[in-house]
Image 1 (cartoon, helix red, strand yellow):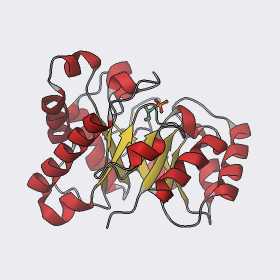
Image 2 (cartoon, protein in one colour; image 1 turned 90 degrees about the vertical axis):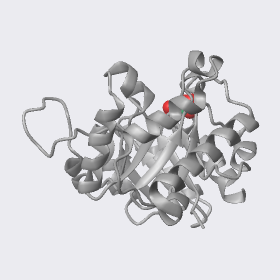
Image 3 (cartoon, rainbow, N blue to C red; image 1 turned 60 degrees about the vertical axis):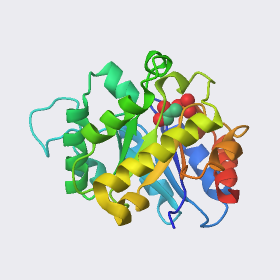
Image 4 (cartoon, protein in one colour; image 1 turned 135 degrees about the vertical axis):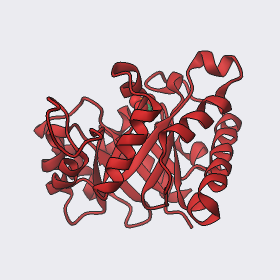
Amino acid sequence: MRRKLAAGNWKMNGTGASLAEVEALKAALPGEAVDVLLCPPATLLHRMSATCAGSPIATGGQDCHAADSGAHTGDVSAAMLADAGASHVILGHSERRTDHGETDADVRAKTAAAWAAGLTAVVCIGETEAEREAGRTLAVIGAQLEGSVPNGATGSRLVVAYEPVWAIGTGKVPTIPQIAEVHDFLREALVQRFGETAGSAVRLLYGGSVKPSNAAEIFAVENVDGALVGGASLKAADFGAIISALAAA
Ligand SMILES: O=C(CO)COP(=O)(O)O
């Protein structure tokens, strides 16, 4: 049985004042029914990890460099994230791929670095609107999965987030059959490449305009093991409602 996971990606949002939302979320969590992860900006990671200590909320980074240390101004390494209290790191988010030109090979190297530092990698993949309209969705995400994940994935090292680029921050969401088709395809690809045990244990998150109002129907899809939530993870009331929907699924 895969444990469900509700993950929040705060993107470039949040300062010390935002920790009040984390305190409110802690107070509202529905027991131990699901795993909860918050990924704040790097500047807030250490403080958020301290705020979450002793609670079921894990913390993660939003990116890391592939190298352990060195002359890479402005970057942080996986070991630095771990040192700041992180257990996870989001890698290959479409905003990194677009804003910083990250390739599948970059994401693969970063994922290997995350694993070497003992972090769980949350690897993001997803098609653009043009790719979906051209009927290339499964080909695109299949290639991204193959290229972005190194050999040796296991259920504890890897989470895959399917985030259609056109659904991020837009309020547009794929239909339930479209989500099911992609998640079934990803499950099959993981089992084929990593074997039945590891491939079945990797959690598959859906991301892109997940809200309290649409969470329950998305979480009812068989191979959806949770969500990677952007905007709605910033407010304890909204993220708490999404977590409750996951716990009830
Ligand atoms: O990119 C996302 C999470 O990583 C999704 O963002 P939104 O939930 O704001 O659409």
